[in-house]
Length: 100
Image 1: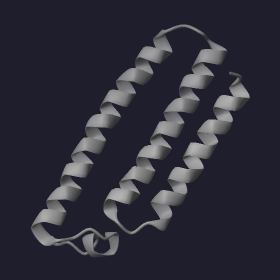
Image 2 (image 1 turned 60 degrees about the vertical axis):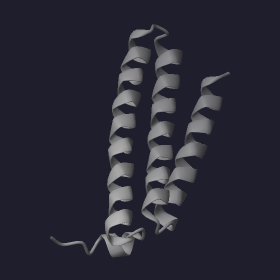
Image 3 (image 1 turned 60 degrees about the horizontal axis):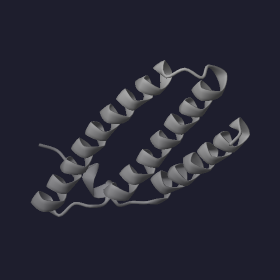
Image 4 (image 1 turned 180 degrees about the vertical axis):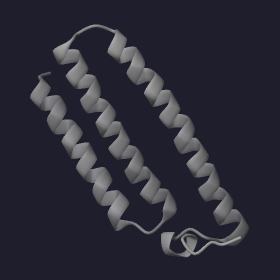
């Protein structure tokens, strides 16, 4: 696999995620688009790190970033689920008007 292939796959993932995040109104679908975009950035960073300096220190750092991203997205999905259960809100325009 070449660097150009990794960059092409990363760009394709980012494009699909951007389209998903901008075109959907359901909160969970927007979050899935954001997750795809973050995964594309991580894939591109890992590919660049591997092809420019093939040592494992960068790969370990990316694993830590992936773990932090997983916790963040889990909390986001939990909040979206809570909004849906408490107030039956699943659309982004309805969730933007929340006030306590």
